[in-house]
Length: 239
Image (tube, rainbow, N blue to C red; front, side, top):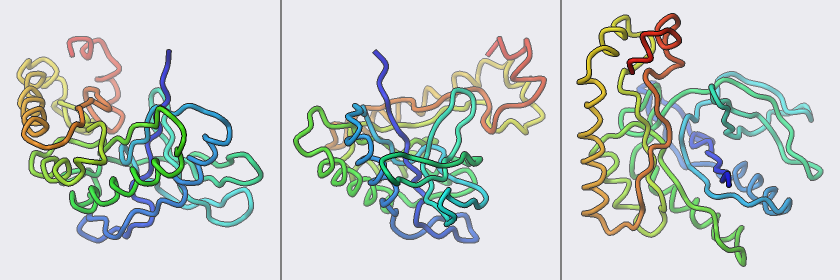
């Protein structure tokens, strides 16, 4: 049986600084309204993930004519961000392009571990409130980014009573713009590279007071949609 998990735009309400850091608290308004919508409809949601690919680029207007909040949605081959609003018992919006992971040094933009932990704790409180009297409650998941040992250790240690699942992404080959992808694909060491990250994450969980488990929330060869004539060609079968 398929389980439904939604990733939430973790940049909502923050200010993006010139150095790539996103500051300020997470604005939960949009996520909260969508949660209420799923409860009203009687939908069973397995989990809510704060993070994943969360940057929405560009501006758009909601159907009512005013700027609407962003809501993360996902597709099979490419993720998207939905500009929408909840009104009259339905959700309406339009898809926009998305950006990248927020943990560690981030890809394009980043959020500090202590702030991310604070927002995750608040997400857990929101879930507990909205799903009061409903069991089982959705899992609280995060951060949905690339593994950075120091960042993840701080994040996990500060969310021991709030986080159910720690998610990280794996793209061993790096960005799709890399002109040496073919050489990397044919080099087994790049596939083995993430063993160390797995071990470090498991050790972090074991030495922490958390009961959270680790998931690979997203994986592939090269991020940013890969590279034409490489990740969509025969050579990629070796990966």
